[in-house]
Length: 166
Image (cartoon, rainbow, N blue to C red):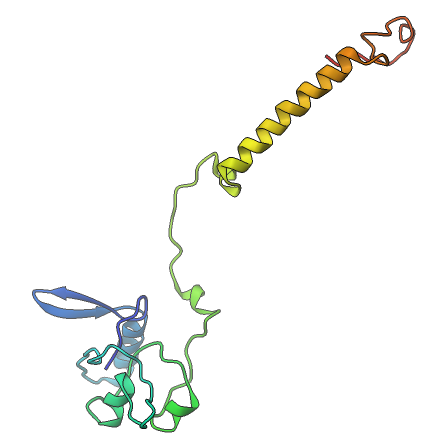
């Protein structure tokens, strides 16, 4: 019995029949190659992992295992004390941090202007507007300041440093 959840168990149909693939199916196939057994896979009727309700009844894969309609529950089922009281678990074969190692990295086209996606367009426009506004203010202050080179050429005539800004 299994529960459909990508990338662990993926259900597709070929000629009207379900075909299963994914990480858990690959793991089951690997075990089958060593132990040599046959199996049939079906999805739990409610496609649930299994929880106990207030009256003590189970649903999902756990119910299928308790009622002996299935021998193995296949999926990314978390180990919980309630579940351990009614079914046996293998050693966990993944955790939430390590599972990303198992997944294939998607290839994406990177653009020359990828750096522009760091900030929203409005932020870039504000930065650009600030740049031009600051440049304009510097020009205004240099143009009409009594201390600028343009307005005091005689004072700065013999200086080694050039003070002409624009």
